[in-house]
Image (cartoon, rainbow, N blue to C red; front, side, top):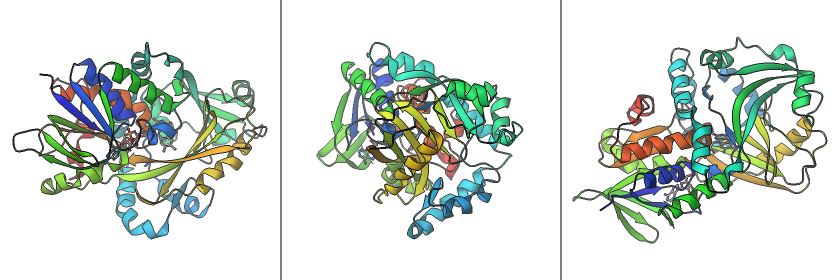
Length: 417
Ligand SMILES: Cc1cc2nc3c(=O)[nH]c(=O)nc-3n(C[C@H](O)[C@H](O)[C@H](O)COP(=O)(O)OP(=O)(O)OC[C@H]3O[C@@H](n4cnc5c(N)ncnc54)[C@H](O)[C@@H]3O)c2cc1C
């Protein structure tokens, strides 16, 4: 009989894993307390970059943090009562940005991202939603051309890894993006990328595909996972118990909480932070954005999607359970106007979701130390939409007991011992 695999979490990572497991003929059930593709995987900025290799924590970043924190429109926010819980993670985060370790992190990020456009196109083939992944540049915009310095470490990490970059002037920039304000005078283009016209739509199309292939999606919360004496796993859910031969934890920012009781014996305490991001969709924008645009000043991404122009980004630290503060999304109204003076910002839709972030910007992929038939596929921080197809492909191979073609050392959970 085909082995039963239960995936906890129907975000883009769990969904991609389900498709690949079905391709291998394994019986799959995906369990999520919410409908599929509604978490971070719904509301992200839709950047699909095969070239992503620059982690969030970079040397010298700490110098900008106080200014960002004090600016109510700044890219990061901290709810001060959360400070004691946040501090240990923040220290690990800042330590992760050291020059000696960056090249390995960059290689590991790129290894996961490199085939993402091709994999998405293969996954979506025949679903009728192929158009949701569109060719794109990643346009990093600057007001002052003199600010562009390709000798900076971030650009150097990219250039060392053959990322196709081009610096363009005022004229070329506005030819690419006519709606952009004239205050922006230059840009760095990262070429040969893609963007999602509806990240949630991509997830839902792949859910339908997985279902057609025989995967089952069940809506219920998982409260506890425990090994059975006879082998396999027992999952306590809001609607009773599920037993399964193998379990994949793809529960995004909630994964560490779910795994904590099982990790106690191995001395692992996963530093997984809910890095809460917001978006604002301007539904009747009256303008078009042709690519993914990164505002290098305010650190957010703007992109035209099916639902309108989505401005997405910012990081808020307040823990997993705090209610959203939609003022963080409303900030995008003013920021969008600054980018696109003619944009119509009436009737916006706001959203908040939690990025699952480890200090080193790398996920955990692989077996869970000390446990049989339990697999990790979580912690993709700012890059999970792009990293999901390859994570799903690798995880499915691991679950099926096949060799993987990617060195999993950088993603092992034991790095947090
Ligand atoms: C504002 C913003 C912009 C972003 N932009 C980009 C981008 O442009 N490109 C990119 O690559 N990435 C981007 N990201 C990051 C990306 O969205 C995430 O890394 C990715 O979606 C994580 O996917 P996931 O499947 O791991 O988690 P999620 O999508 O969060 O899915 C996890 C699922 O697990 C479920 N779950 C959790 N616990 C339980 C439980 N106990 N029982 C049952 N179900 C449970 C949740 O309900 C949820 O549906 C962005 C994120 C944000 C917030």
